[in-house]
Length: 272
Length: 132
Image (cartoon, rainbow over all chains, first blue to last red; front, side, top):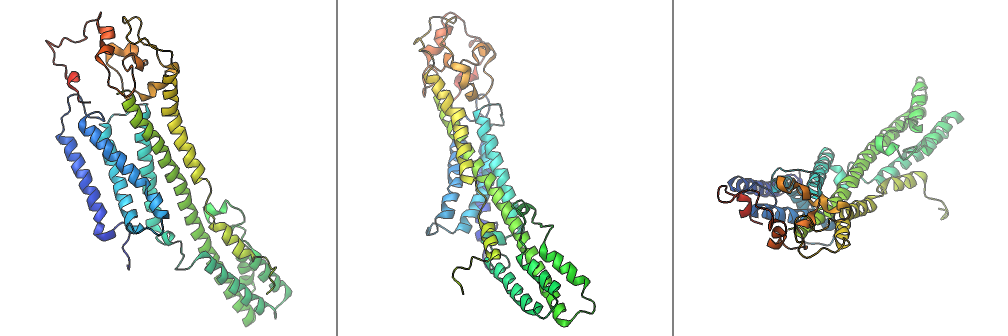
C-alpha cells in the first residue's frame, strides 16, 4: 500500500500511545486506595475526569480539522488514526472515572452517551475498513460522475448500433438509457432497484440472442456492461449512504454528550 | 450543442445521489440543547427561583426549602447516607450556596440538636477524611 492505512498509521504510533495511556490509568486505579470508594470525587477521579474531558474536546475537534483543508497541523489520516485509538482509550478512562458506579443521573447519562458515541465510532471503523474506497469517495479510482459519463458513452454506442435494427430493439435501448439508477430515495439504503430498465432490456435481449445478428449480439454485450456498471454504482451509493447514516448518529450523539458533559461538570461543582 | 439542453438525466440523478443526507447539524443542536437544558439549565433556574432560604435554619424541623419540582435531584450521584435519607431529594438542605463545599454551618443547622449518627470515638469515620 502506497500510503499508511489509518489503523496502522506511522507504525501504529497512536495505538501504542493509547495503549500506554490505558495501562497508566489502569495502573494508577489499581494502586489507588481512596478512603471510601473509588469514583469521580477522589484525586485520581478528578484527574481521570479532567483527562476524559480533554480527550472528548480533542476528539470532537477532529470535525474541525477535517474541514480545515489548508491546515498544516498533521495529516487528516494521522488525526483519524489518533481519533480512533484515543477514542477507544476514552472508554477505559471514562469507566475508571466512574469507579464502576452507575445510576439514574446526569453523571451516568454523560457516561452512557460517551460509550454510545464510542460504539457508533467502532461501527464507522468497520464501515471504512470493509470499503476503504469510501474514504476517498471513489469507486475503482473514478468519481460517480465519471461512471455516469461511462453509462452515457455506452448509450451512444447502443443508439448507433440499434439504428440498423428493429423498432422494438430501438425501444428497448431507449428504455434502458432513460431508466433511473434508483426509482425512489429509499432504494439508496438497500442499493437495489427491482424495476431496473436495463435489467429488463438485458433479459429481453438474452431471450432473442439465439440466431441474432452480430450488431444485436454486440448490443447485448454493451447492455450487459451497462447493467454491471449500474450494479456497481448502486452498491457504492448504498455503502456511502450508510456511512452518512453513521455520521448522522456519531456526530449528533457526540454533541448530546457535550451537553451532558457540561451539565455533569458544572453540577458537580455547583453542589460541591 | 444547444445551450438550453437540460443536464442529462444520468448526470442529474448522480448529482442528487451525491448530496449528503440532511439533518446532522439540526440533530446535533437538538441533542446538545436537550441535554444541557434538561440536566443543567432547568435545575439551575429552579434553584435560582426557589423561595429564599433562611441563612441557617434554627433546627431540623425547618430545613432549607427544597428546589421546585426537585429538579436538581438528577445531579445526585448516588444514594445518600441512611440517616440523611429524609433529605435525599432536598439538596439545598446541605448545599446551601452554589460552587462552595458543604459548610460546617449547614451541618450544625441540624446537628446542633441531633447527635452524630456514628460515634467517632469508637468508630473510624473514613467519610470525614474524604478528599474533595
